[in-house]
Image 1 (cartoon, rainbow, N blue to C red):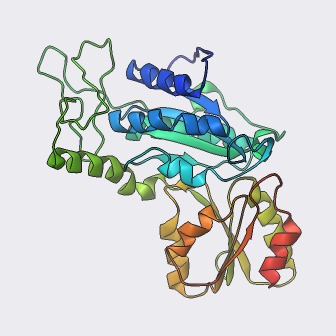
Image 2: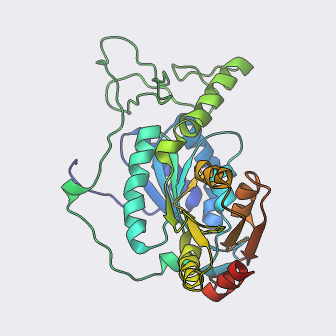
Image 3: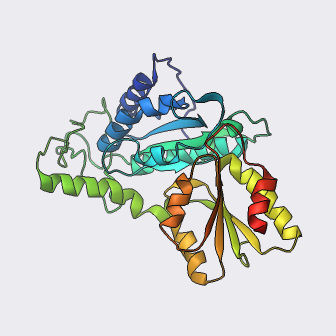
Length: 333
């Protein structure tokens, strides 16, 4: 683990904060910013720039009831699709969804490591309930915290020109930072392996497919989820963030009543745990899904892509956390 240290810079707005962490990343720093609601929208243009230039960075978004100013101090979970598709174009990202203060710490550590490993923006997509929650958090000694360094050049600057975007077999290029002696060129334009603009459709197809595939083809290594009572479940509750806490209580009560019920909690919202959901469907035991979420059905859409089984939903656009008894009633039905 390198020497621990941090510098905090106050920016005038979220556009500037996103630009600042991209610049810090280009200079070799692990960089982070946080926001809520409309600020996340303001960051989206530069999220696309970070994805195109493949500069690692981490953004925490504490979701609140929206759109626009909405309910600034009340809960929402409606930024799920924006996290994946918020900036224009095709690219890959990673988004974690903590459901406890401990996971806020643990998943932020994981987010920095994933950002550096795959050279992508990574989101910690919590919600207002989790953001305001008070629980015990265990922080290990610094040397016990997992640390994955960025993959750097394998030759000295004087040996030969450095190709900024020559990817390895994992589809991720080594990175050289400003000030390390390498000639580095980065641009938001479509570019070749040198980092120089390559303004043609063939170069664009190669580049954009790699930006997507470096996440898509490594999804099994990235994706995390929690399972509860899935071995015999005919009804599967899928919930994330604070909603998963209500859902777990409802599933426990349903099991006490003798109902064949289980729960799957996506910890990575992106990549979505579709492989595990397909496995449950193909096993033939599951007869229905229950999907509570604090939006009007953003996660439900992902499950609808995978199955024609009934999907019972519990939705509100924000402002309050779903109650366990409401989820239990859907399970009973």
